[in-house]
Picture 1 (cartoon, helix red, strand yellow):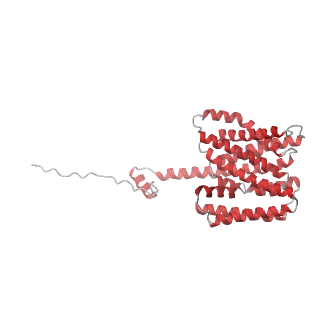
Picture 2 (cartoon, helix red, strand yellow; picture 1 turned 135 degrees about the vertical axis):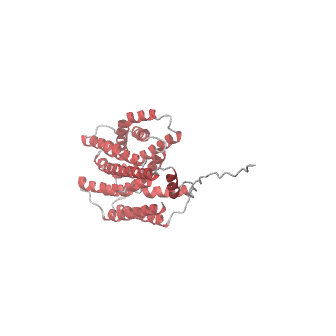
Picture 3 (cartoon, one colour; picture 1 turned 135 degrees about the horizontal axis):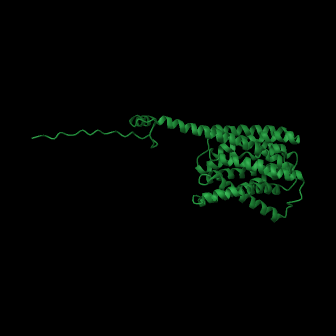
Amino acid sequence: MIERMPVAHSRTTAPKASPLGYPGRADLDMMSSSCNCDLGSSTNMKISADAAGQSLGLVVLLAGLVGVSHGAIFARAADAHPIVIAAYRIGIAALAIAPFALHAALRHRETLTRRAVAQGIGAGIFLALHFATWIASLSLTSIANSVVLVTLNPIWIAIVATLMTRRRPASILLASIALSVGGGLVIGWGSAGTGEGRLTGDMLAIVGGMCMSGYLLLGREALRDMPLMPYIGLCYGVAALLLWTAVLGLGLPAAGFPATTWQAFLGMAVLSQILGHSSYNWALRVFQPGFVAVFLLGEPVLASAFGWIYFGEALAASTLAGGVLVLVGIGLGIAGERRRV
């Protein structure tokens, strides 16, 4: 009688998952050796691809920054009502990209969601409000004041993020907000002594920055489910429709301008809008809205320099002091965001 011996089955122990549910580095190494493949090379390729994408994103953002920083210069050079200036800027840009946006939308029509379309429409509304208030501020206050206050959007984005997550802001974020708001008050205090109109211009610039924050936040969400070209076509189209409705409804003059004004309209549309804002929209696919908003902080520096070069506009002491406080405050906010991540 032959006794059946137990058979020892060889079992391969599955790698233990990491606390997040994904294999750890040691697990990947064990799997790599068992299948005789090199996962490290693919990981390095992904890291290289991410680094290349971020490098390209920074180049695009720099080009966009130069274009956007000329927006205040073109707006100051245009001899027209602020809403008319805004309507021509976004209207020309919307018409220029409409064929490409429509073609891309038809190609991707099956993947476009109602949620993304609604977010794109909302971003267009915020964009129209941003241009209407900010361009109006340029006729009442200095270029430096306007661009410093309109670029407070990293603070507004941080506040919105705090409200949405319902978490108590970190101390460094509270300090960032306090310094930035304090800097805005210093700028406003300096403007108060020069007349009510300049203070009103400062307030309009702050509102314009809030609207810009809404534009960036909704744009980031919409671009998760919508390609870039359909998004900017929808967003710019909605903004142009609202602004031109305001122009016609208010009976504002929309023709008969000097050649320099028409040139300013074209420069704003091509350089500041198509190159500038579209670059920011593209960058939202690579970076978070907070980082893009922080990058916009280069605009006060460049726009103030351009204002001095083109118009000989000097910087007031209150603008310099308040601007430093704003930049230091936002720098703290950046440091806090990096520490949180």
